[in-house]
Structure formats: C-alpha cells, structure tokens
Image (cartoon, rainbow, N blue to C red; front, side, top):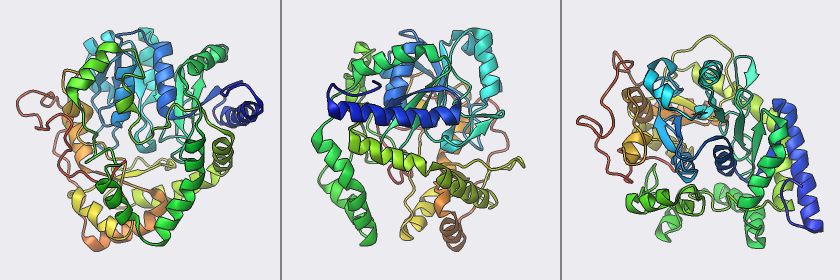
Length: 432
C-alpha cells in the first residue's frame, strides 16, 4: 500500500493513490510514488540520494520553501548563475571548482521553462552525482525530446499547480526497483490524516468560489492579515536566522524545520484521505485540457513586447509566463484592479535573502537579481485580460543591462543589494 493506515478507509485511499501513480507513470514512463505534496516528495528524494552535508546546486530564484527543505535534509545549498531571460541555470557560468564540489544538482524549471536537463545530465554523469528535478511548475513541459522529470534519478511534481487540486504530489523514479525503499521512507515521515483537515479541504473550493463571486478577494486577504492568519508580509517569509541556525544544527530533521517548510501548506506531510484523493484524481483527469489552454495563453503572452526573446520553438504549457516589465509594482497594482492576483514571485534571490550563513552565493548573481526584480509571472489562463490591462496601463518592457553574463558582486559583499535577512524585497507583491 502506497500511503494509508490499516482498515477499509486506508484500503480505499491506497487504491486511489495507486490509480494516481498509474496516470503519472503513463505520462512519464517512470515508476511513480504518490506523496501528499511536492515539498514532502523532494525531502524524501534529497534524503535518499544525497549524503548528509552534501552540496547541491540549485536556482536562487526559487520558492524559499524549497530552500528550507534542502536545509532540513541536512544539505548545503549552492546557488547557480542563471539565464536572465527565463531564470534557467546557466551551465557555462558555473565555475569548474564548483562542479567538483557538488553532491547533486536540483533543477527548478521555473514557471515551466525547462532547465537544460540534457546538458546537466551529462555533467552529472561525468561527475558521478545524481540529477534531481523539481517539476512543480512543469508537469507538461518537455526538454530534449523528453518530458521534464524524465532526466534525473528522481523528479517531483505538484498536483496543486496545473492540475489545480490544491493538494498532492508525485515522486518519479528512474530506477523502479527503488520504489519500495522510497515508499518506506515516506511512511516514516507521514503524519496521520485528520478529519478536520479533510473537511476543510472539501469545503475550500466552495468558500473560494463564494469569495470570487462576491468580489471579496482583496477583503478576504485583509481580514486574514488582521487576524494574523497569513504567514508572509512580503514575497519571502521571515528568515528568523537564530531559530533557523538551531534547526540546521539538528538536520537532517524535517520536524525541526517544520515552521519554515509548512508555510502556505500546513498539510504538506499529512496522509491523504479518500475525499482528497478523489478530488485530485478528478483534477488530474482534466489535466490535458488545462495544458492545452495554458499553451494557448503562453503563445499569446510570448508574442507581446514584454516577453523574453523567443527561440522560435513551440511554446511550452507554462504554469506562469514571466513577462519582463520595468515597473513590476505598477503592473501588479494594475492587474489587481482587474481582479488578477500576481503570485509566485521569488525576489530577492535566495543568496541575498539568506546570506552566506545558510548558502553558498552565486558566483555571478546579477542575472538572477535582474530577473527576480523584473519578472511578472502571468497566469496564461488569463492571458487576454492581462495583456489588455498591461497595454492600457502603459507598462514598459524591462531593458536588461548590456552585459549580464559577467560575474557580478557576490551576495554579502560590498555592492550587493541590501536586504535584511527575512525582510521583504522592495516591490513585494502578491503572496505565492
């Protein structure tokens, strides 16, 4: 049984999770293990494939939760240089001495734009280290003729993003013989399902529909803030460096890092009950329809003057399309007036946010800083509305500096952006 406790209810949950695994196996051609969230699956993968204290290359323009998952696994994040136009890892800008120090590489596939997995696969093979793929935003994307998630030893997917299930994830494995060991690793970490959590999950879509129908979305956010029920004042959660240092000292330990890892999803390690699994299965069954609509919206957004330089290839069905705008705050405000909430902002980059105490900074951070500052992640399912708003508001494209490929000022050195650890960057927007 993949997930569940003994008894009839557990048997129902187990059979439903098996069906979800079969669906994803058909998409990826890989053995899949259902997990309650992408972040939970990533922790399991990092613990299985990476030695304690290992150094893992990752993108600095990424969800801070992923950063804390890596710390929880007892690993040292190493921030990579990025392509300034799509946030993918710039392999050529990674120093040779950095490659030689790594225990693994983690791709991000930010917003669905694939990292250069074929080249990273070759690098990892030459070094004898694992490649792990975070496909949370990229469940329909391809690179090198394969789906994202079919290049690494393991890959993790979110069923909360494109599928819109607001729960669930998948851990895909290159070696099917490891499935039982991975399932056992999950079992050791899962928390029991709670009836109250299942009920809240069941009722949430109806509550959200009521809020949207009454035009109360902004008021709802305000009430949550007054009641202290939101966990972010800006884009990044508070770092709380002293408490984090104590948690890092206990790593590998997911529970010690729970105050950071659970942000925005307190159910991330709960066993999934039958109601939750049933809704996830329905949502996953409509995924192809959603991906087609995302591809259409992506094509429209990439045809605008705010899009990164095109490569002429077929558009990916992106989860969000990162338009590059000069004044992101103004663009966010204009979109909010139309009821379009902008989330999934990752500014400042993780090395500027967390500092050298918790991560190795990028050797060439300027491209990541520029992208993080100007990227406006637009939902392709609302592409037409968004383009109309940006046109009417007079949003200007961001003009990149002449040279973003030379090494910039490393984080925490003179000239680096001055962000206090745990405080929001200038221009904090909607919550991810």
